[in-house]
Image (cartoon, rainbow, N blue to C red):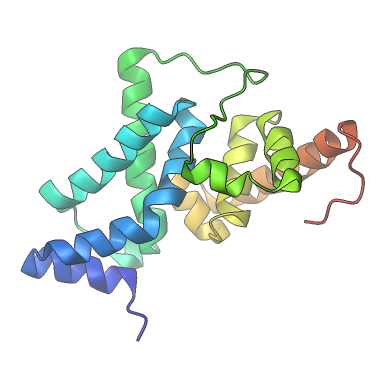
Length: 186
């Protein structure tokens, strides 16, 4: 039986069984890390933010209402986004220039995804488009979120997300064409 994430979290709140929180951490660690990396451009900070997000679940036990907040995943990513924005404001964080390589030789969740050459070129093209386009497309294609869930995660209206996705696809298509890739499928 594949139990819903919402149910696992609500059970964690009721019984405080660390196994439930560990299960959610295992499911969302890599995707949340990559999402947060899009904000801070630093693997160490993204890892800290990911752990801070789960620490907030463990300590604060924020209320989850699926009718109001959508899916558990979009709600969790919204908490992570808020943590990232607080860090950026607090430290007046400097983003890494787009032409600077942020991929290390270590085995990280990101390096697993980038092993395939085609994925590397796609990731490189994604890094050249506006950050909000990149976030929306990453959440849609890599994380499988719906427009509603992306809106919750990014703190925007659904209509804004449709525009971001459309403009992001066009920007990505142009970036790939500049790289000599004209047969991209979306």
